Each structure stands twice: as C-alpha cells, then as structure tokens.
Amino acid sequence: MPNGFVKAIELVDGTTYFLNPPRLLGAISSQDGTYIWGATYYFTLELPENAGEPLQKVAIVQEGGLGRPLFDASSTEAFEGTRNRLGKSLAIESVNLDPDVPALVVEFNPPIPPGKIVTIRLYPVRNPTVAGTYLYGVTAFPTGEKPFGQYLGVGQIRIYDSNLD
Image (tube, rainbow, N blue to C red; front, side, top):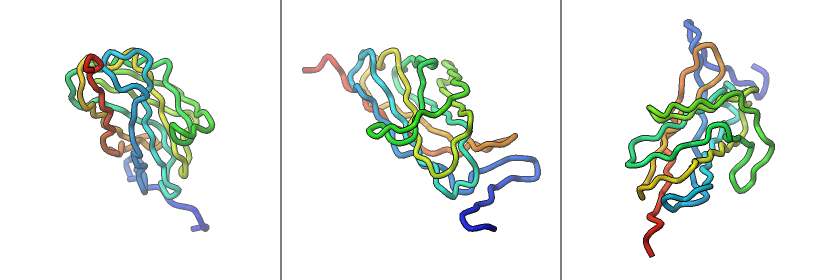
C-alpha cells in the first residue's frame, strides 16, 4: 500500500466500517439554565487520519432524561474545528429529527475526510424545563451502501435550575 493509505473495511455483503472510528471529544451548551431560550449545543468529534472511510452522517440520540429540548433542525450547522476555534463551514445534505426517539441525524455532503475535527452546532428552541444531566448517545456512520454505525459514547449536557438563587 502507498504511504499514508489505509484500506477501509468492507464485508462481502457491502457493509462498511471505520478502520479506526471517530472519537467523541465532548458536548457542551452555551447556556445551562432551565427554560433558557437561544442556547446552542455543540458536539465535537475527531475523525482520525487512519479512519479508513470518510464520515457520512452522525446520529445524536437523547438517552433518558426528564425533559427534552426541542431542536430547530433547519438551523443545524457543522464546522471544522472545535467550538472555540470554528473553521470552515461543512456542507450538510440533510438533518432528520425524529421526536419519538428522540434522534437527530446529520448527513454530510460531501462526506468528511479522515483527519478532521468536526463540531456540530444544534439549536434547541429552549433548554429543558427540568434540571439534570442530559445524556446524548452519539453514533458515527462511514460512507458506503450499508454503513455500520459506530457508537462513540455519551455527550453530557448539564442543565441547572434557573429559579435557584
């Protein structure tokens, strides 16, 4: 293999996998009080140089919790870099929001090549009305006809009671 080239994993049935999956670097909110309007949630991932496949989509699923923020899917954005050092804007093909799960799936076009740090910026209409630690499972999908989603872990966003002095 040429220097720097990493072969992706593809099964006979066409299922594709990351050779080395992305890492969830963290999740944070710009505003951490209950009922707050205009907060921004940031989810940052690192796609290693030797991932073997580009990043096609990311699913962010709330795991439990007493309240649920309602996201404005049409305002979702993605950038290279971290929330404190946002770089080039990344093209999003679609954002699907399933309120029954609740899941938000961001699909990139073109897919994100290996060796990038990506931050997805979500806009809840309002923070949850109940204080607590909100857990969001993050799954990354490579390109391919039958991509296998790699669960990256849980991003935690802590929401505090705005009514406490």
